[in-house]
Image (cartoon, rainbow, N blue to C red; front, side, top):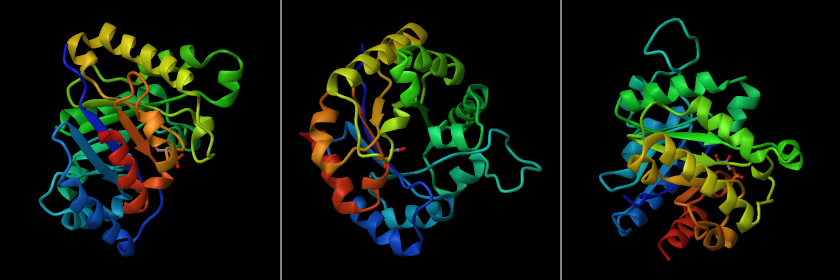
Length: 249
Ligand code: 13P
């Protein structure tokens, strides 16, 4: 069975204007020296994708998007299609982030439709799953995640990554224990193999939630953790690159 590629992706959320492009240029410079089995991506707000692609130059740093509309075009005020994101230079799209599930009411079928649109256009979909604190406390973390996978994953694993982001670890400075992460990632891996066979064994499963330079080495070396989806610490090249280097060690 294939081993997954490693992927470290930065999610800038609603942060960043032109002044932040220097960070992307610095990330792109450093990314030139990375091993070929490690993909590094940064997902700025949609307004910066085009310029981020230019700032990243010809190197291997990938620019991605944080969300997309599932439909190809039409009367969807304020939304962008996958064709528009690809046209701007995006190669990867995060879908189903818990902030969109909670704040924008996105359901599993919504997330699946977005993921299908992304992969159909030849971009990579990063599908996010994760339990709330109440769900974990009730002992329901694994069943919640199984339901999210079942409802939101696309029909095939070509150009797919999954990100496990416990909602209570996002932006809080709190992280699960290595054992808790290993338990969830093993369950996600089994689900992916049952669903997709060898392609599921090769699908990167990322951990996200308060990943920092100080905890990256530990988090990135948990079994079945193939990379990270990084929020706050991806806003500066210095912190993001420290996390990327932890993935190489
Ligand atoms: P933080 O790294 O800021 O906790 O955010 C994680 C996240 O939501 C990435 O998508």
